[in-house]
Image (cartoon, rainbow, N blue to C red):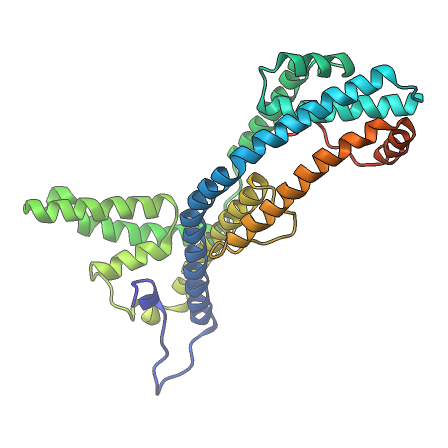
Length: 323
């Protein structure tokens, strides 16, 4: 049994049922353990997926970028020679800037592509890029200031923090390596104290309690014997911990979907990411086919005009949005 699982409160066979606070403690311990396992799985599996993705996508990416680059120059040539309405010319310019902007995020030294972008955009690429980066920096600074803004702390939060400090102090007193004369034991206590300090810094009450159990400062029935008021303080800290862990898992999921162009709304299972790579491979194959097919659009001006009329209504994203 893991030290965390050992913290579960088991009601006595011939005694009263657990109080609401202690039932809540048990539920939080289980939820935190499951969420930690999910987080660890994400952290373990993503590097291998990233490598497999890179090996599969690198050659396709070069082909796709080359095809998109050729398409930008084809659109530029079509704009120069065709008979277009004002709206169609505007749509062609937007398409050129959208695709050229995307490519220039990955290939900033492509002077020919940059020249095409600058010819059709209201602001040249380098200036627009600087403005966008300034905006991102300003947003980051505002977020940092918002996080640093002190918030009023309520009495219950203080009591919950005091519970964490109390557990930490007992551990620090028992494990202080300077008080140990045996060199081997001093090394062991130093390693344990590093875990204690990290758990305290991250307000990880569950790990602190598990470490108390590990060094036998407490037994598995310690929380069961605690009064409900103390358990409620524990529960408040554990609830905050669970919220932070879930937010971290959600952040990893979002980053994964953003990095690998996984469709919004899909919740990938970190234990089985292979189907995601298969879906992406099929999407790349479709995109390669569409690249070859779309050049035929420009061969017939009437076909191109009908296509442009459809593109005019498409929601376009800003070419300076981060990829």
